[in-house]
Length: 345
Image (tube, rainbow, N blue to C red; front, side):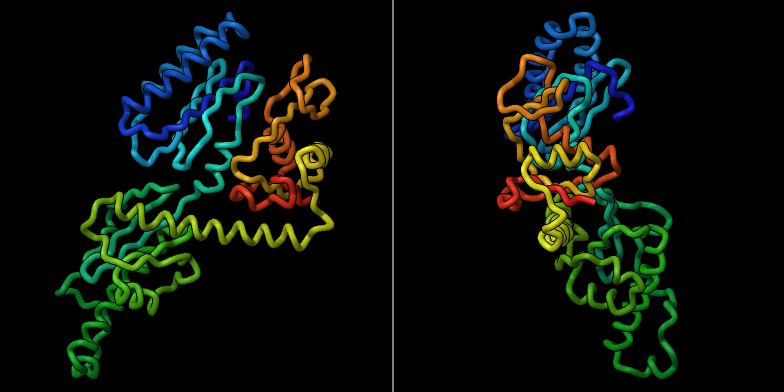
């Protein structure tokens, strides 16, 4: 996306709070487009019509989902794209030399792929997840159904003489072991969420070779419920995993206090000097400071010269340019660091 940053770059982020359907969502989007078009006619009159038409085409292509909490429209000469956000966003319109990246970077942090494996004694279902959405796998392997006539290779002569319940549990475990073998083709290091009745999850864990991938288990039978119900159960488990991962970074921040710079002014200076290894930012931190593009200085009032409104965006880009890492954390977590902190190299 950054390679398409030919000015003017237009970034529109629309909050979909209260939008119950596509019509209501598009009404909010169109209001932002009208506001943007007015600014374009003033700042870039020769490009206003083409860019406005590109924004309208993007909005027309939007497919509504109740999972969406926001929409991002990004347009530049000869480039346009739309993103749906499954997390609350703050509405904004940005016009300038570069796109606004904050929401996209936040989505990247939370938007990794994960798998949900639903276990039920007669069927194993596999779902591919991203953010709060799940897509069921329907291919030659999954859903994987239990076959009463199939020999899952567990019952020896001695076992056949055992109690029927013991034999049944052995066959069930062998069924899950076969499912676990099929799972190998889909696991490439992603987190794995197990869902299903407690007994079935226990059987699977007894025989699985992929326990190191399991990040959470959600107990209950979801084989016959609407997909949205399973999504609502699985996504909080994924977010808990992400928050645990973020806590490790917070501990690193505290352990490496001597290598930490905090506050937007000092962070921006260090990032521009190429010192940034990991930049931690509270999700909605937005200081009322401006970056003077001629001097690079940070000002509390808008300068008359060309300036950048979002100093945090400048800090993020400076860290990214030196192959650093951006990590968003909950609001208030970095209060002692003035809401933004940089772990230096």
